[in-house]
Image (cartoon, rainbow, N blue to C red; front, side, top):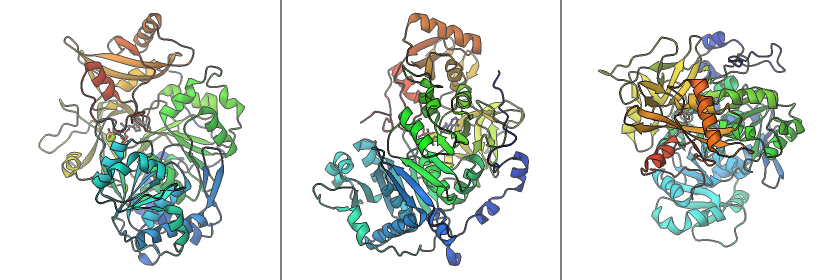
Length: 597
Ligand code: ATP
Ligand code: MG
């Protein structure tokens, strides 16, 4: 393929943090990464909020802009590091005055407004635990999570509260305090105004000693493969957030950085709030939803230099509009400040990497991680070659391997032992050697499930991958999604990627449909770009196109057109729903399905 490798500029504008991969791995230790941070004064331990905010003031950088919050109507609010320090101190004092203590759970159900950032970091200052909820969740998912997570405090808006919590508040006996951000039209029982409390609160707060192992964050997974799990993270995670943002996002203090993920998901928290602030950069926050023009405008007007987004967003930009080819629209904007783009969440098809190069002047760097890992584990780096379609190589301090799989598709464990597959390109379950600081410490209330995620000294990720002879990892599929057809193992990503190279195809989701002869046959659901309509002729063309690219054993046998592929609210194709619908089976947990109530 023409795009097998992308070599980098030998003279980049900014010297990359990681230029020599082997050397960076050799030189790295988590202990040294810890030394890059300050720690609480007086050997008080390690607190995420101190590293993200207060230490910059101690270093004399308080006037630097921490946040540039763009409201839906385009109004921009700037918040300096000094301002953020005072606001978060006020919020920590509010919690203290409410009797909310170490380990108590504070939930947010908010859009991407400045108060969200104040709440997150103020909660961490108070050594309480923050659990962010995505504001578009319906009432049931909200209440389930509040209950499961033992919420004591909820910070939300009056409108969201009325719609999603109010009428079942009695089912949440542990929820004592509800704070309303924004105007309150009519006082409700057992609720208070965030702004009023903030006005009355002192901005003098000393972060109490914080054990690096103290619980800090609770994150629910995306729910792509089943019921979302609550992953527990601790303050020590900040060491990994900081180090990996230097390596995989190439953050430098002068950067203006935009992460498009909502802080309701782990990406929006680890890399939308914590990691960039620990680097002292300016973080752009957009309250608005995806819109191609709005996004290009933000990149241009805010002079964004580092951009972290998701494959689903890239593929939306790649669709173009009825009037603009996807490579034309960005030409109308000045994107000259951009110097690095990365993506996470789903496999990034090679065509998308190349589209970045063509349309934005920069290739897109894929990286891989999970809610459970808390930070980026595998990445294509700014300073090294990219292999389009590959997730990249493990970060310094991260050991990854591919394990032999058993009949159930998961790592084969015999007598407590697993087998690491050493030969290049062998497919198996992706596993990681525990020991990095942001590793999850448990699934909330589910020790059995947590214990089952480990075997023989490895953490088993549930994803299937292969490693090439040079060390790059390639995503094959989730263990649940890999298809067995006529003796072949087929990863849906390979098939989806090939289909997306066809000019008519915007996105694809591929499943195995049970078949009495082959075991399963490959069926693809595709959505089309503007200007293309479903037809039998197009179906035949796509079948032939994929047969030419993939060969008859792997190519889909059936194609269905579907402009609304089921996706999670974090933008992942839910293949389990495509399967369930195809087979007329129950849909299972759909609390994170995009568009659900
Ligand atoms: P759930 O665990 O509830 O089913 P989820 O796994 O989608 O949901 P997340 O933790 O948000 O929840 O997502 C992590 C998963 O996303 C990974 O295990 C992997 O399957 C997928 N993923 C993330 N980044 C990439 C990538 N760069 N390439 C391929 N897959 C990726
Ligand atoms: Mg998962």
